[in-house]
Length: 130
Image (cartoon, rainbow, N blue to C red; front, side):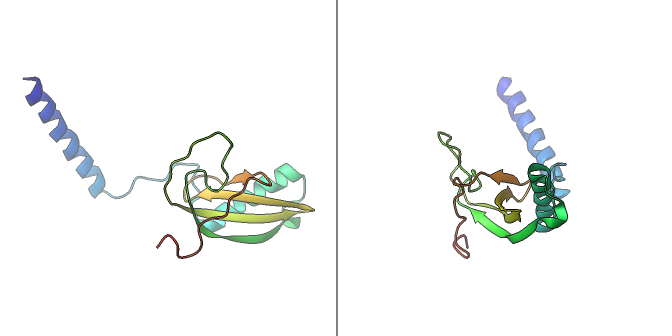
């Protein structure tokens, strides 16, 4: 009897999952930038202004673009932490706030994170993930 109930529940679960998949992708979490790279740049500028005390309009975007990170550390591994080894599409935004160089890393979803100087690892070379 347990097998039949378990099997029946499994079939019901698969049917429910199939119905959800047919409706399209799940909505992005609230913390995900909605507009892709531009939203990540805006969030990085806001954070840099807050951290540095420099007016947002005086912070310069040095470089911003789509990248592929080599693992789940998003190019900013913390010592002693193990990371999933998988290619992760995301963004990198480099800003100059006064004399400070600020390096922000992000996945496709979620806010950018400031990577401390000296800890950043370069993303995969263009075309390497294809």
